[in-house]
Amino acid sequence: MMDAREEMLTLLQKLWAKLQGLPTASPLEIGAFAVLIIFIVVFLLMLLMTCLTCCCCHRTRTKGPHSQLT
Picture 1 (tube, rainbow, N blue to C red):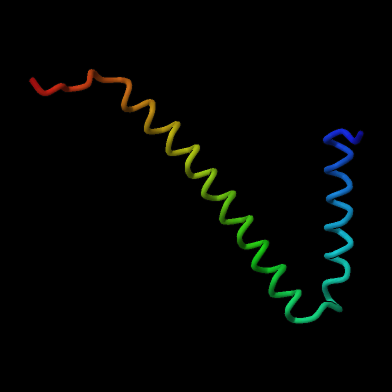
Picture 2: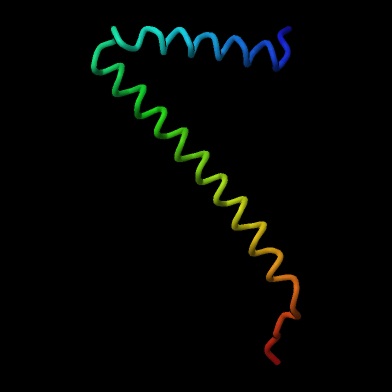
């Protein structure tokens, strides 16, 4: 059974092989690869923005007392 490090190295080796073959790839493969990379980058940016927003907003909301309607 492979551990997480070995699986990550295997995945990175496959990705590196794909990147080396990209100059000879068809336009369809290049477009698909670009869409995949853009999707991953957007996902990571949204995740980062969510974490930053939650951390910043959580601190400011819990400092003061909450107003309640009576």
